[in-house]
Image (cartoon, rainbow, N blue to C red; front, side, top):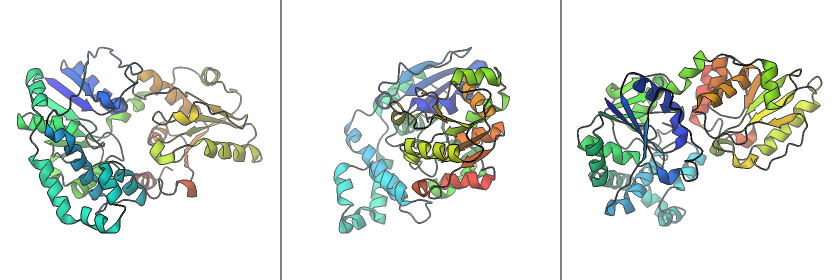
Length: 391
């Protein structure tokens, strides 16, 4: 069989990789299509492991007709309106975030109450949905699918803003090719866009996401399958490959001293965490009995820019892997595993790395802060962590 994967950004390779690897091991062909316009400057930094897995790679193409000029804005307006529905678990932060994806004149008009009431009305919602549904599939994409002849088209980030994957799903359905949407992360059904193309199958992590998909995205439950979270599967088989002394020496910390691992969050969740880390390090150092504790800080791979020129104010703070790009490759995953495994505990704000921490069975601490209230208690997926009872 031929499997065609589409994903918006290289970051989404991580949850795809275990699936693609298994397909290849079974003798299938796998092709990966990435949005080039969303990955400028990253192509040379991204390395796909090819151990017994001969993936074919290419770039997604966009529409080349009159629809290309306004259909993306129609879809993002629909996504924006979804955050204003009463049944949507949302916050003012998420509404503000998605308003930034609107067409600029619309973005300016919704600041004025009379226009906002009109542009967010139910009949505008219906008109936009009608426009999106009558848009024909892209002819260039249809031709590319006819040439490659995939058995299945799998979209890995169809809920991201301005996703070209919707065009591939629509074209595939017009050709009778089965379609799958994978939900790659825990927050994708509550803090991202809506599923505007109903696939043949939707793969989610758990029953909680089934409920989110049916209530928030109108996906028929019979099309939804709970698969677990493939991105975490490799973690259950990981074991140390070096001892604690060797890891600490590689990182640059004293192996005789304990360390607390601070795992950073994405830019949307935490923004610039440098001052927060300084305050935490100072508090730890001033606490009786913790003067020998090192704070090992691991920047988030999608939020690195704040750390490039950062110099810690405390000698007990070490920033590790400032040039980290993606978690998908096994060597990076193994390094991260060591950092968790040999730590005294793990601390952070709101990140999926808490899930890896739970798998490794380390104490996991989320600092409840007024500074991050909107991206902790104000974000639906943080409550999933609280309900799991390991924080």
